[in-house]
Length: 288
Image (tube, rainbow, N blue to C red; front, side, top):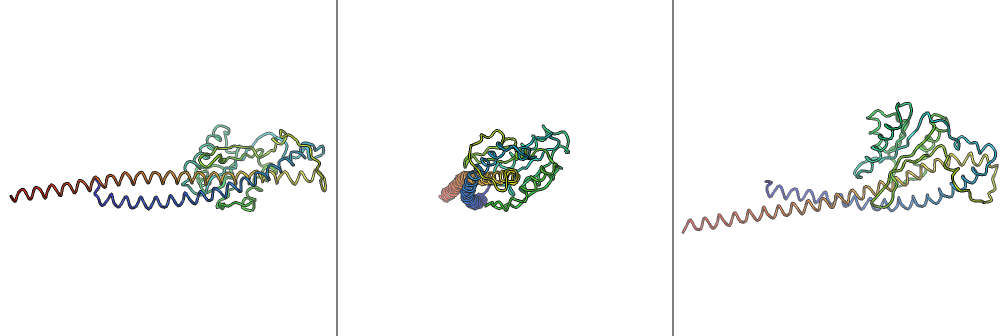
């Protein structure tokens, strides 16, 4: 049985850990609020951009209707853009994504020549490189407050792989924030933009300068890059939520451990006091 001194030291160290996890929980909560606001604000812009692009693509009769980004082609190689975090302490946030990606690749592909990985975050990069997955390129060190400039490089590179016909499909795999305590794993196709054909076209009078074809050719890469940016904003919010929940659980567990140790300490102290009283009474009786 541990001594009273050992129990007291463990209580003190657990209290220090509880302070750290509580502070991390509060920091993640603040970051979550900002990330949610950014994701929601961008969602309104992305919705309008999608409406404009779908309108042009749906009514185009010239070369824009045959734009390569709108056309499916035989899939010889698929790229997966996997969004993970740069660090842990976020519960199952990273593990769920990596486990899903691993199982998906095992089911769909027979050879490494059939797919490639694009990854954000140190956790995902370390996972894929250590296991020998073909990683086309990666991005680490993304800030908590994302701007478009932070992700434009990896977004352009990913879109360029499709435009240069090095890949035939681009999928995004990330955690979507449902609320502060739950996320859902999303696997969505970014390229080709075949889903725009299913978008209901709203009749609106747009004026194009210089012309419809050139506008669509400029908007399609921007729209695809915007989808990646929006997913990264969403994933960043989910990361903060997962970390906040994990730190809250850690704080609650630390409190339970402290209560249990305090009870053990009090019992040990009571036993020591009882033992001392017994010895005193016994010594007094021996002197009589």
